[in-house]
Image 1 (cartoon, rainbow, N blue to C red):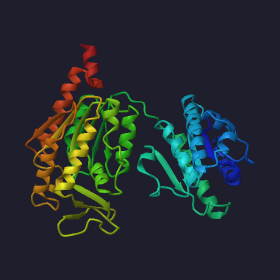
Image 2: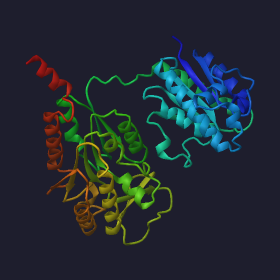
Image 3: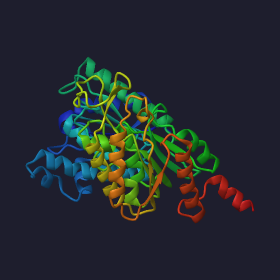
Amino acid sequence: MNPRILLIGTADTKSPELTFLKERIIEAGGEVVFMDVGVLSRGELKAELTNEGVAAAAGAALPEIAALGDENVAMAKMAEGAARLAARLAAEGRIDGMLALGGTMGTDLALDVASALPLGVPKFIVSTIAYSHLIPPQRVSPDLMMILWAGGLYGLNDICRSSLAQAAGAAVGAARAARRPTPSRPLIGMTSLGTSCLRYMEPLLPALEARGYDVAVFHTTGMGGRAFEALAASGAFAAVMDFSLQELANHCAGSIVNAGADRLEAAGRRGVPQIVAPGAIDMIDFPAWSENPWGGEARRYRAHNRLLASVTATGEERRAVARRIAEKLALAQGPTVYILPRLGIEGWDREGEPMHAPEALAAFLDEARRQPIGAAKLIEIDAHINDAAFAQTALSVFDTWAREGIVPAGALIDAVCRQA
């Protein structure tokens, strides 16, 4: 079958551009289901999903939305209806991908629609603010793809046509090649950084796979943590091992390298069993190509590459992070274990390494012990987070949960039990 692409845009202001996109999608072998999200009137391009229908899906009539007199409020209401319609179409198998077009208003709406669609349905947004600092990480769905709409603010031109043609081809191609997740084994969500900083996944990954689990490891440099939170909130994980929390520390310090204010909350709120550790909370990250906002001789500095650099957090900053972690753990509705490795929390904080700051680490540990964490269990170990003892402790907790049925038995273990 030809891939069916949900095309989204405002026909009252962008009919020529949307018509061009529709033609290119058909030319590439796709079919188009056009959703008009304009508020003012019907545009020239005929819509399968009219703006009246979008408004109705949000529980309102289009004239009522237009009469609100506030374009922000009006488009937010249209976004509500668009997201509901798109989710329904996906659930009914009537669309295979999404392609939205917009400036700031259209992008705002399209982000909500993308978040309403399941993982594995290709999601493209052609936007004048693609991956801009204006887009908060919590608005970005895990598999969203964005294309800069260069030179496309008003009217068609050669530059604009080039961007739109590529977007149409990308959406059709992605829909043809897409594979929705069809899990046959329970999935464990894990957070980490590169192995030069955090290494526990090296022993844990094969150990968990041998027990019959799949493991997805998320790179916690902002967007990775955001994807982790979104999937945890959706119920994708049987359990999580959230061992890299420097995005949370970055947020506390005001760094842009963060995953939003609700980092370390989704799994707990959903009741997903979680094992947590404070990996890399001793660092504050920032773009290496920018001026260091935390300059000064008192902080140790390390450039990881030309994109990402870090400085050490002070003892007081780490105490603040310890309090924030405790607040979030106390919200957890499911089994939670908090592991504190006394000898260090990332590879560069060992003695002789560039981020070594034992007094600040001691301050964090002291504050972590003082803070109430609700029903969560605290385990302290005389080990570094990269030591084998840390991975063994985490695995011991996980195995206990598996035996007690708190997490589902892995596929291989379950198969053995059935044969017995």
